[in-house]
Amino acid sequence: MSVPKSQYLSSAWAEGIFANRVLFITGGAGSIGSAQTRALVHLGADACIIGRNVEKTEAAAREIAKVRSGARVLGIGGVDVRNYESLKAAADRCVKELGSIDYVVAGAAGNFIAPISALSPNAFKTVIEIDTIGTFNTVKATIPYLIESASRNPNPSPSGQTGGRFVSVSATFHYTGMPLQSHVSAAKAAIDSLMGSVAIEYGPFGVTANTIAPGAIAGTEGMERLASSQHTRDEHTRQIPSGRWGNVRDIADATVYLFSDAGNYVNGTNLVVDGAGWRRQGGLQVGLDEGMAYPNFLFTGEISKNLKGGKRSSSKL
Ligand code: COA
Image 1 (cartoon, protein in one colour):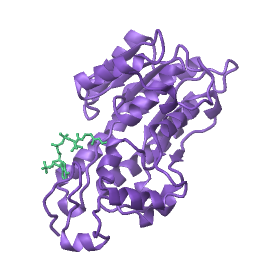
Image 2 (cartoon, rainbow, N blue to C red):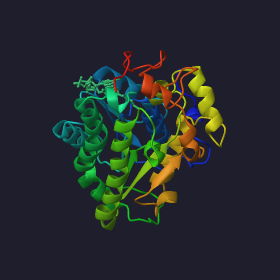
Image 3 (tube, protein in one colour):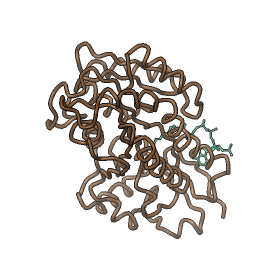
Image 4 (cartoon, protein in one colour):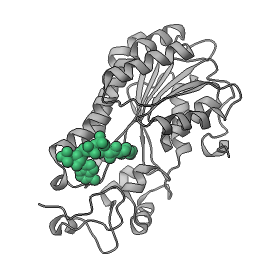
């Protein structure tokens, strides 16, 4: 059964605003990435979805193509963003088969829950390599095509059509800091900085580069890991000024905004989509069972019994 439009796109956007445009997205088979892709494809774009797993990536492409009759969605699996050469080959193939790359989303990310005491140097490096270096590789592999797209689509354009836009999916952890997320916080802070540099160096070529910083988004692998116990979920929801977790549509709509004629002058910034959650982040408790409290669990080495994707053994100081 296909995904109802209301789950990935609001009613705010005009049909066809991305007609004859092509999206290149890493992590496009994930929960946030597939909503971003569905939204763009629904509004007229074709897309290339990049992922590590071949079957998952190709299956996601087939599903997403159903949102619009005639949509071309290419699933390019077997690509690890840590490997520049394979990413470059994917970008070249995308342009050969679909004609251009007008929009890029760098959404591939790696995450797990661990205190610094349980992070090996290789564990820290792995997340930096996937998130930060993977985003850099994505910039390098696609920027020549984005410059071409920007030159075909002057900003602002009389037709209202756009091109030459880059969005990275970031986070808000590093605004205040969050226990058990030192590796991801460092990686995402670097992504924010990198997008600013891309805006500075490629803005003169007509390219825009921004981040979207999602807060707690329901139904994502990230939140399954970060808030896997009901206790964490309840506590967390109470901390969010807007009173709810976000959903993938909130992020898809933000992406449409940045790529659309409405986002022409937004460049080099971080668009936070989190219900003001980061402003209360200091009180947030992640990955905790009832009875566990910050900072006590760091002293005792206690780790939540409900963590998904977390190492189950105690941490060592
Ligand atoms: N706690 C502490 N260290 C961990 C860990 C955990 N939960 N999970 C992995 N690591 C460490 C490994 O032990 C290894 O370090 P070591 O060689 O010193 O032992 C290092 O991280 C690399 O792990 P590996 O499994 O070899 O890396 P990978 O490239 O196969 O996988 C990950 C990358 C670790 C990010 C993996 O979790 C992953 O692929 N996740 C899927 C994508 C994802 O996380 N999406 C979330 C989106 S928010």
